[in-house]
Length: 345
Image 1 (cartoon, rainbow, N blue to C red):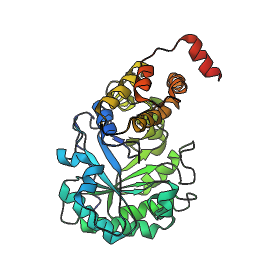
Image 2 (cartoon, rainbow, N blue to C red):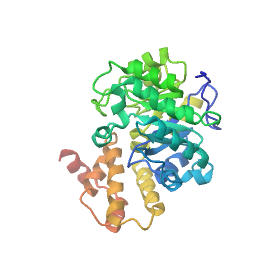
Image 3 (cartoon, rainbow, N blue to C red):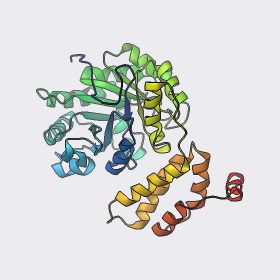
């Protein structure tokens, strides 16, 4: 496989700034969420939720449901490129479906070797393949070979291993040897899930042996963490997942810091609540209101993990099930006594 540099064209990034990707998060970051987050600026590319490949060639409507941006030149409305992710273990079926996705306009096929979900792993998908580097190689090679003769590259999203990090370097090498032109590495094993810390030093070990670009992912919640992740891993580019939901303006703040050295103000609760309101206005009106409320709580629950004020509002809103009531309460200001009571509960 030629070690051709993987490039992303962007009007935002300076040549040396380093790129910022928006991570795929199954059941969390869908097309609407991608639309809202990339509108705020800072992101150079994004990746869809995974398309699950088993033993069948999937019809185009499956890809278009997961990636409606295929009908818009595979870009969000604000112009951020969207790459389509596949999850599976059978090289021939992965390749067959990769050809379908490429024919529909997917500019890049990303492969999921990082999903830690037990259901996915039990069905031989995601991080489960990290137990056998040869299977990682065959899966990537199946897609790379199927796309030969096209201009659609293959990338891979990995963790540091399944149970432990013993095979971290081998799996990364297997993905590259199979044809991946860029590796995104979440700096934990499947067993570690999302528990801190992220092991950026292990990403550095992968980067040192790799002949393709490596992107560091995991625990990049702040400007300081962004810089530390780059320094420790040696990676120029990063990917944000939960952090982008916790602070939707983080990518923009990183980009501004890259280009000017100046810190933008921290994100205010008013901005967060306005974004949640925009989400409701744009969401599919056919969705039941209880589902919409559940999605809002899911997002707000991630926001509160690194913002005490969002935590106050989460406690205030978490038992509301009616959408109208939720949206009315979302706009309500919290008194100092309510905030103090929430912190002490």
